[in-house]
Image 1 (tube, rainbow, N blue to C red):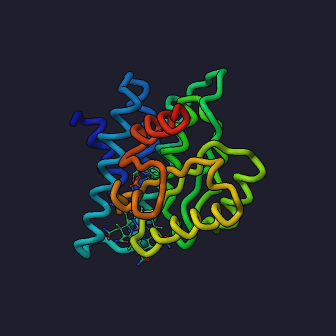
Image 2: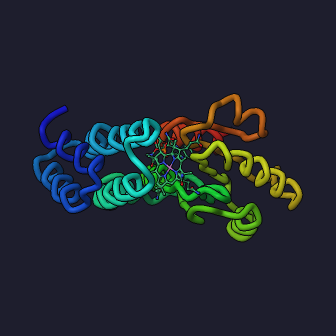
Length: 212
Ligand code: B12
């Protein structure tokens, strides 16, 4: 990792939002690839923050300031990740499931989808199953994309799928799921149509769901 990427990485781990934004700007000015800033600098830093939390070195406040630094860096990368395209690839209703406040991964997936000309209706985090249903109903979406970062909230994906069934919408919409604790096997078990482990594969999977 070069010096500037290392500085971005460290600033996120330390939760130094101002340093993150300054260094991301510097990296962009130097012509660093936005995908390198994102993956090597930022996503890797959040993985380390998770590890520190697991080891009892970090607590929620440290995770929170790291998340803020990450979000501000992401906002700066957005224009580079989201290129305007005329033809719509499809309509996606996205959200983090009920009880879950983790939205960084979901936001990244939304940005990458937008960058591939998907129209994204982002419902935010802690989204009630009924809200997903209502949004699919109102927007005629092609895909519902759900994110969960907690093992305790993963089951709410299944609850949402059941709610779509009960509303008679399950045949009209594809369900794409993701988030750090998820697996392809879990996606199969809850009856989702697709799973992807990261944002770029989320785009590829969304495209193949539309094509199917
Ligand atoms: C930042 C963070 C927080 C922040 C979130 C801020 C925010 N606005 O998002 C705050 C401080 C609020 C937080 C709170 C909590 N957290 Co937290 N948090 C994290 C941390 C460190 C990073 C998550 C992150 O942003 N990663 C970076 C993004 C880019 O990665 P990602 O989310 O995985 O997303 C990628 C893929 O998963 C995928 N993806 C994601 N969504 C989707 C959706 C679709 C459709 C697809 C296809 C793909 C996809 O693509 C993304 C991009 O590549 C993780 C550690 C970790 N390793 O995940 C813990 C972690 C998730 N948190 C954890 C815990 C325990 C909590 C708390 C319960 C702590 C507490 N005691 O209060 C609370 C719960 C709050 C709640 N109700 O949600 C645990 C979960 C353990 C478990 N087994 O359930 C983790 C794993 C930490 C740990 N190692 O113990 N947290």
